[in-house]
Image (cartoon, rainbow, N blue to C red; front, side, top):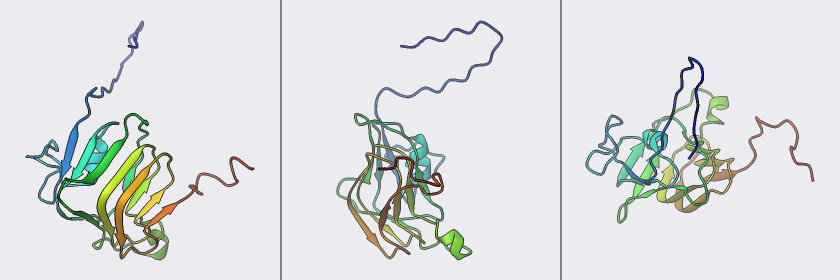
Length: 174
């Protein structure tokens, strides 16, 4: 364990993470004010991702989950503690952006369904549809995408590449 010694009148803010992985549930009849349990699920993947820590599992319950903004997966998990996002066993979930109409082509070009800039995320066994641009844009590392069905997205289902906004030249030539 790490210790912290405060020798002056200094405010300290601490964030604590559960040492035990948890399961979070997202359902079409949930509420983001809920705790994310199976009996009181969250409504959005946004809320579940914000609450998740390495080792957690986010279960998407059956049905079509509608979104009007990008779901960002920016957390940096570890190889021993990835975050898994998957349909609940025996169910089929679909993440659908059909209700998101960007105001112009510039905005549409950045309107991905999901953007993964973090590490050690595992996405498995659900569908992604009608994202204005890519279903998923992956700029992170050590991420796994399995059994994802992409359909009716504005661009490719999945794009893997460098975040060109962060680099004006190749950071690691040759």
